[in-house]
Image 1 (cartoon, rainbow, N blue to C red):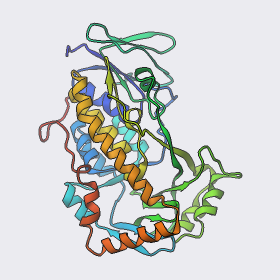
Image 2 (cartoon, helix red, strand yellow):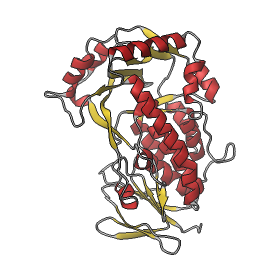
Image 3 (cartoon, helix red, strand yellow):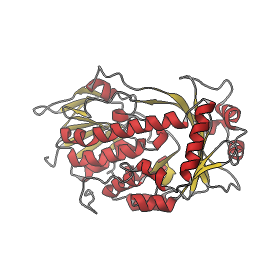
Image 4 (cartoon, rainbow, N blue to C red):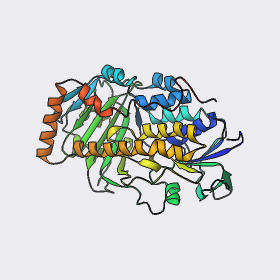
Length: 389
């Protein structure tokens, strides 16, 4: 790769910024084209598992992010009435996978990734369209509406409704509705003291996690038809669905304003793409392998993609070979988990809860095995190696 080789990253989310940082560190002349007017991220908080933190180590900010992360202590899984089905052991998880799981605001991570890039690299309010994917003899071409740009590499990091993906693979069916919608809030809750937890009901789940800065991150999901909205407001909808669940859920809802609530239907890619590249264009993150949030791996896999792409930018078939099998397997596992935690029938829920309670008595190791092959991933760099900036 010549020092002057140019990369255009379409999309300024976590995956796009991480890819831009990885490529910049390897000597690429990078431009990030983000259609939104700012880098303000969609969503509230993100959970980073040891695999993503190791990827951030490659970018040189892993320890910084660990220090900024929200407290993530022991917690567990509960029923709507408050009974603990299982307890999580943070120390056991860290020992098994070589590091902690940490939680922090998405805006914090976006800010730290953007800070790795020189001024002027990120162009907001810059919608981009792939004109030509290029090949070994021709560069790829991208239009911003006002100008056409050429590059030796284009990165499609434009999310679940990726126009880059559609341009590369027009016959692919694209994402489908996963059958449930989600709500998220990140707010101060005065006097709140509780263990981090997730609660599974019938076709509904709730998670509440204390943040290091004193705020609370809460999320909820419920099986519902696609495209639905509350007849009044989404706080009222959450009160109807979860208002009689165990503490601290009522306190969190009481502290929530309607405008604090984000609601998004969950879509995912059920048919794997034939490749994560075509010509001089590579896809990453949700544009390549959108998955349900049930394993908390969507953003984590995007960061993995980014550092692997930085390593394999001169050999896109090798990038596909490295990433497609892994992300396909994780996405399928996330779908299986969704079938369990979003179960609706009383019989299925009773069996599920009984099995979880029984397994929890054998210790945390059985539950941690579910993340074997995920959280223990290591990037394709030498130990301690970082990209140069």
